[in-house]
Image (cartoon, rainbow, N blue to C red; front, side, top):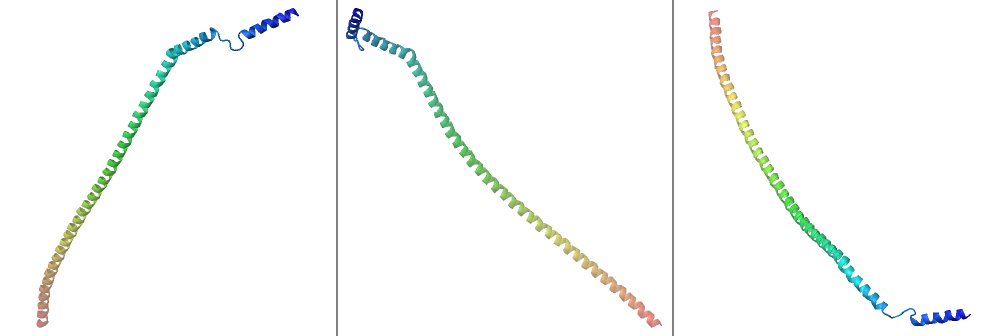
Length: 158
């Protein structure tokens, strides 16, 4: 039993000396080690990683900015080209329309000329036919006169 009492007294001495929170030179040493480790990690690991992340973020931001600027420029160029294309189509339609009207005028003029030529030809043919008719009638009259004279002579001779 004496052993139990001595163990109990040793345990009570240990528990009264430090207990759960024993403030001695170990605690400030641990705090200094923690701070030193934090500073070392900060210089060796956190700052380079943070620098790399910041550089990457800036690169991404610059890339996005330039991409959005390029997109805006592309949109402006697209609108400009679409407007120019629409204007070109309008002018092409006007040119086609004027060319069709011009061709229509030329065709109508040619038709009028052809009609005039056809009328002249018809009039010339009609006049020539009238002349031939008159000549034929005159020659018939002459022949009728000759025949009538011959008939008259034959009738008188008989």
